[in-house]
Amino acid sequence: MGTRIHVYYSHCLPRPDDAAATISHLESALPHCLAVRDYWESHGGGEPSIERWIAEPPNPRIPLERQYEGPGKLWLRVTPAAAMLFTGARWRGFLMIEPLRRVHLAAFRAIGEALGSTSFAIWDSMCDEASTAFFEGGTQADCVAAVRAAQGPPQPSVEAIAPAIVKQAERSVPSVWFVEECGKPT
Image: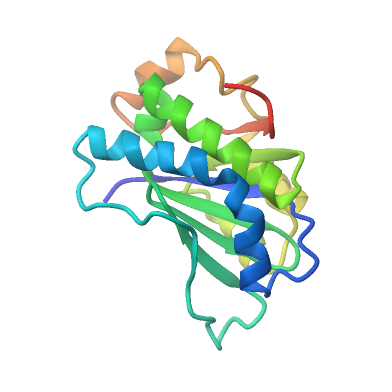
């Protein structure tokens, strides 16, 4: 299956449980999400992706969380405290393949802007401490604190992945993470 990409945001959605309002916010990110979809379709990424953001049915076991699926194999979970995006893309590919990284970063920044977040934190799906913080109702800052405790400080910038990290990604899943601004051009 592979290790996926997780992206954590703050948000300023007045009612995170309001699917129509959340989808309305996400519409501004749609062109960047469609670019991710187009990237995957042009690189043999399997089944066709959806054309717009859609809300998953509410989960009665988790009433304060809503889930959304977007174009480009992007999935978003929103709680009152934070938002977490996860992708169909693999973490190792994101670190090694610049075109894959660029198209995803543009979408990550646009989604963050749509949610009203000024920054996003990005790491691999294997950081259970951060996922636990999110699912326990933590904020973006709580999730960042959890990954910092587990993996140390963030890397300087996702704009230029250090050659040693790229080399490590060729053989294994590097335990590295990044904090970036939303809206910053890629």
